[in-house]
Image 1 (cartoon, rainbow, N blue to C red):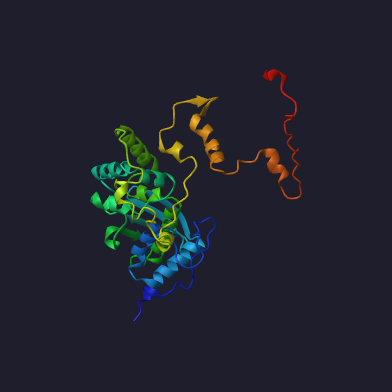
Image 2: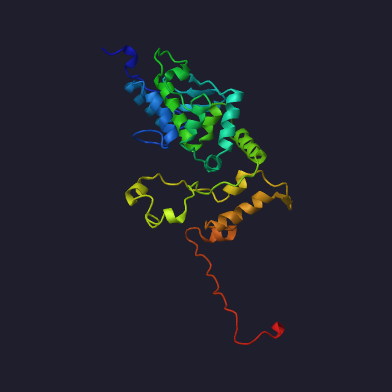
Amino acid sequence: MSDWRDWPDRSGPRRVEGGIRARSRRGAIGEQWWSRRFIGVLESLGMTGRLARGRNYARAGQVLTLEISAGYVTARVQGSRPKPYQVRIQVLPLTTPQWRRVEQELASQALFRARLLAGEMPPEIEAVFADCGTPLFPRSQRDMEMSCSCPDWEVPCKHLAAVCYVLAEAFDADPFAMLAWRGRGRDDLLSALRRLTAAEPALPQPVLGAADRPLAERLADFWSPGLTEARLRCLPAVPATAPDLLLRTFEPPAVQVRGKDLAALLAPAYEHLAGRPAAASPGEAAAARPGRAAPKAEPAQAPDVSQPDPGAA
C-alpha cells in the first residue's frame, strides 16, 4: 500500500527563472566517477519515486541557490508553495590533524598534485583518505544529516534529492568542491601541498619505478611487450594535462614585467608550445565574422641566397 506522501503533487512546482538547471537532460546524472560515487549513496536508499521527481526538479531549474562550505551544503528549492524551501545537507569535516595527514600524503605523490591541478580527482585519493582515518565520500545516509523545510516527513524528499543531483554536477565541474565540503578549499589545499613539497629534500626518484635487473637476465623477454593490446585498450585514458600545469604547480615567481606577473606572461608561451591556437587579435576576430572575408595573407618572400652577403666576410 503506497503512502500518501509518495503521491505526486497535482499542482506541480512553481516555475522559476534563473534557477540552477542540471545539464543532464535524461538518464543518470553525474559524469565523473567521484560524482557518481556520491549519487550512488543517495540512490542506494531505494526511494525511486522521490528520486525521479528530484531529478525532474533539478532539470527544471527548481534549485534556486546552492552554497558549499566546510561541512555544509545549503540550498533553496522552489516547490508548489510561494516560499522556497530551505535545504541543508551536513557532513562531518575532517579535523586539523586528519587534514595534515592527508596533505602530507598527497604532497608525497607528484601524480596527485598534477592531476588535482588539472581538474582531475585521482581514484587513489580514496585510499589516502581511508588510511588517514576518514572516508572521502559519505558511505551511507548515516554519514549525512539532511533536512528540508517542506512538510514531507521522509528523508530525502524530492527537494533534497534535487539538491543532491545539482550538487553532483557541481562536483563534476570542480572536484575541489567535494574537498571544500570536507573542510579544505582549493587555495588552502594547494598552498599546503606547495609548502610541503618545497620543504622536502630533493631526492632522486625513479621515473618508472621499474626493478633494476641485469640485462643478461632479461634477454629471453627483452623484446616482449609488457602488456597485450587487449589489456592496453582496457586501461583508462590519461586525462589531458593543462599546458601551464608547471606554472601552477609551484609558487609564482616574485618577478613582474611591466606591472604583470611573470607567470601570466609565460602562460601564452606554454599554450603555443602545446600546439593550441593563440587568441585572435581584435582585427582578426572582426574579419572572421560571418559576411566578412578575411584579409588575404601576403606570400612570404624567400630570402635571396644567390649572391653572397658582403657583410659576411
